[in-house]
Image (cartoon, rainbow, N blue to C red):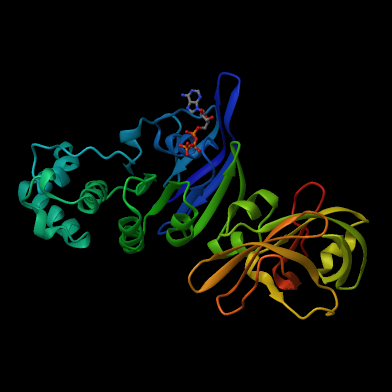
Length: 362
Ligand SMILES: Nc1ncnc2c1ncn2[C@@H]1O[C@H](COP(=O)(O)OP(=O)(O)OP(=O)(O)O)[C@@H](O)[C@H]1O
């Protein structure tokens, strides 16, 4: 059974808490990405699962077995690091076969396994070459081939693509995802690149300051961020997060003072339980529709900077109370700098966060 469970794992370095009470459960065949800013504890979490770092408290359970006291080689996992070192004096095929030397496998079986993973990773053509004679993308695939050739219980990847250029990273994401989905193993990938997480993960665990803030599918963390941090971290351009004052809620309509205006917005019913208070409104840049002047319940803003982005245009605008907002419109919607925008926010993409920063949801 290929599963990974971290149960309330904590890691202290002296007085410093690098990871706090992290719960993570990865099913067989599932890819979970640990995503978060630098220093949030992603690598430490991965190293605790691998056994390269002891947990201060909590349990690591792999394949249903508690692993806390087992060394990395006894955990039946394969790790792929950012800096994969290939043996320069060995051929690609010999590099891939390396992990099998420690196992009792006959030479014909070993060759068969190397050929099979080489086929999966499209390396058959380069098996006889030396590492100096292959491209960076091929080197990365060799590192992955070396990890999967042993057929371990699960995989751990630490920033596997960060050394590759943008184009190669893009194609490798798809290739690694495809290989992993055919292997039915539990996999954890550490990354600080949200695009990598959104494209490769079945679920994403978003970390900040040693704490897992939210775990969910890429769609869940994007469409229903649990708090202001997740909302600000996921999505490009970043979600607009502006302070507002909730004045009253009646049914599905809330009256909110925001951007120098008093607007009535459609909200989810849970907002009805809030007392009048300071709130943070979260509106994705693509959730605004420009409407004509005089339309009701719109947000007024002045265009300050216009950035063409190909099929769309990013407009940086400022509300009368000096909040900066980003608005993305199709390329054919033209604005001039200094022009007044009247914006309607899509209620299904308008999030309300309470004073504690947590999303208010039904
Ligand atoms: N051996 C150690 N001793 C003391 N502090 C450490 C040690 N290893 C990590 N830390 C600290 O723990 C925190 C989490 O580090 P970690 O490497 O897990 O972060 P990360 O999210 O992987 O960051 P990055 O994306 O920059 O690699 C950091 O503040 C780091 O300085």
